[in-house]
Length: 130
Image (cartoon, rainbow, N blue to C red):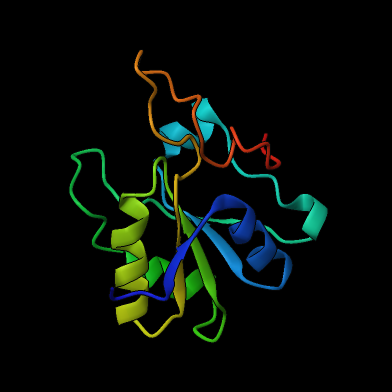
């Protein structure tokens, strides 16, 4: 593993409550149409940086955008839709000098037998979102 580790959503919330920065690496479309984590109760604002471009390729500006948004001494908790893109983003952040954790299950979690994302993830574990 080339990042700090994996956290279940509730443990990710606890890390953010303790001062880590939540970095949501989903697409702008996902943020707009599916929702975003609500960390306002922690007086902590998430950082939104797309890991993937519309083409599906990794965002070549990801690390530079991260460096502009978050000091390198801050611990990161990285979130995507299901916990896959966030692994790649956590690896890139770690290579750039950050301590980065991946959020298992992501924001929406894995699909059920019908393809609906109602099984697990940030939203389905009842963590705050809007």
